[in-house]
Amino acid sequence: MRLTRIPLFAVLVASGLAGFGNILSLVVVPWLVYQVTGSGAQTGVVGFAAAVPLVLSGMFGGVFIDRIGHSRAAVIAEIFSGVFLALIPILHLTFGLNVPLIALLVFVSNLFSAPGMTARRALVPEVAGQAEMPLERANSLEQMMLRFPQLIGPAIAGGLMAVIHPAQVIWLAVGVVWLAALSIFIGVPFVRATDEESEPSTYLADLLVGFRFLMQDRLMRALVFILAFTNLLEAPLSVIAPIYATDVLESPVGLGIMMAGLGIGLMLGVGWFAWFGHRLPRRFIFIFGLCGIGATYWLLALLPGMWMTAGILFALGLLAGPVNPMLSTISQERVPAELRGRVFGLMAAIALSAMPVGRLLGGMLVDWIGLSGTLIVQAIGFAGAGAVMLLLPALKLLNERPESPNVRQPEPSPTPGVERVR
Image (tube, rainbow, N blue to C red; front, side, top):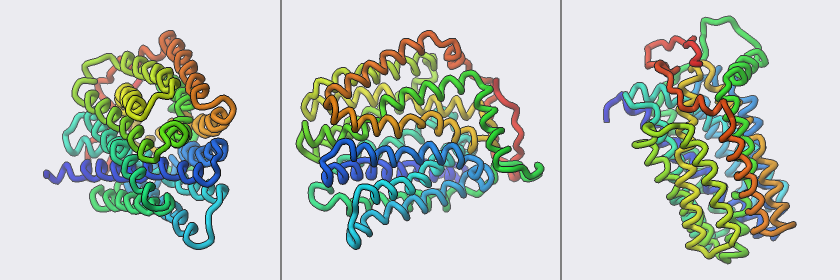
């Protein structure tokens, strides 16, 4: 392997390992809560606690990511995320666990995990430039590494939970999260993203610079609010999945298989975008993908068996796969390197702001109107979102590709201040 490709390889490995740890906790923790309580509402409460930090850390953590450097932020974030996640099995063996305590630990763990994801995403343009790889392909590979755990993680988690206590499975998640930090520490040199020669500014001033940049860009402003609404609709899936597996499939292995179907679809969706997506209009990929996701919820509402459910989730993943790498490429093209932590963090905060509410309402809706009714509500919401997207003028800008994107080439001493792409 050429030395110029080592940083890219390290980022890809870290994304895969961190994604594996995240999917393990996403599968195991709701299952643990539902087995203890038998309540969809309480499972939704823990899902709410896991999603809130994604908004808070995105809103307020971007300034620190830019100030301390993207690679250093990625390492620190994963280390502390693993520490608080490890407290779940430790307390299970000592003082015992209850729902409020699990919710608190998941909250704090994700408070660190989310900035780690933002920091790794901010590293992609530079490491891709060093490896002389097109940005769209680098983002697709990063997404493939992030999504690959959805192929193997749920099946591994389901198999392990069939033989050992779910709390002990969390140790595996802790280990891979710490390995992700090690990969960045070893393979990616420390580079400060902000301009060290600029005058010192306050935290609030730095945050407002990122917010103004985001709000003044018509396309990015429209995208983040569309994603906030679609995330509201999609968020209950993480709460519904363990309930679906328990009440309909009656097996933790069934949970693993249905989530693995989603993972395979996501991998193939990202894969075809890596090779062919640049030839298609971005507006078509975005609108068709989100509308197609909504269509799969009508089929899930029929509550089919294990293999049919896995097939439907496979189709959902195939449609959803290209969306994230395409949006990552667009934002990296339009945002200067010295603002990526703030702007990407704010984008994540706004786009994910409805997820805690979605998970909480999803658990409540399951108790009120059942699994099928909840899935129908989601399908109707996606249909309405599709109609709005077709009429939104700002989304026509998706098809514009800048001639000179904001990708800083590797230098001994990085020089920020790249002009904004309009």
